[in-house]
Length: 289
Figure (cartoon, rainbow, N blue to C red):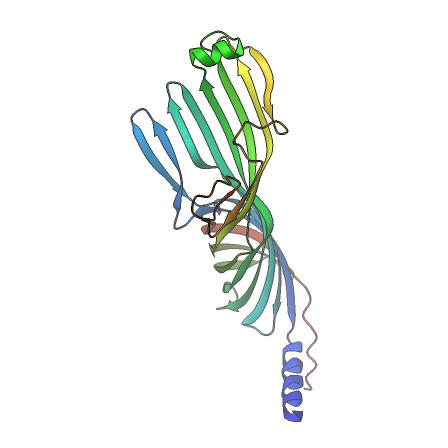
């Protein structure tokens, strides 16, 4: 035990003689990698799958890095993803139009090991977790009334319903993989700029969802709104659930539409980041000369 303490103390003293801490801020854009099917586009001519990843979009990161020596260090980062719109459902038919997209709004963190190949080139590899956020679905739907439906509401034939709603999806706590390769260019003893290629490998298992906004209007053939708020968040159409829970199993003959089988959605991406680094003064060398 005594030898272990002596060895640990010697290691701390050896690293303290170098001890370099730096912080950085960066921003970039990522494209989806290993895209999975996210939705479909339906027209009179047929159906087409749409593929992608919710990890695509703009991101910003704050990072703190501690180097033990000239080569090795540890890194902790916090980030925000402002995801791009992904097509979930796109329907263009004579009497029905649907435009449903979904996008990520997520906060995450990563812990990594950093290795400097030389004074300019570095790499890092580590674990990635999602801290919070949501996948936001934004839906617009227009459906023409049949003659019987128009008569029942008291509007002329050619009128239609126009529905807009937002549904937020939340996931279970995920664990992923992050890796990056970058180039740092020093400006002076404290400041540097850098560019890096970064890969995220992560997917998210859905836990629940909630409709946060809902409105249906009845619109006349000339575009005039005849009935505003036919359905609202507090008066949803029959069969529409405000909240949904995602589970791994459903019993045979299940009739509870508020429960659905869970699915995994992709957040993996490959991106390019640009940023600035500020290096604090190194710890003084305490070795005797």
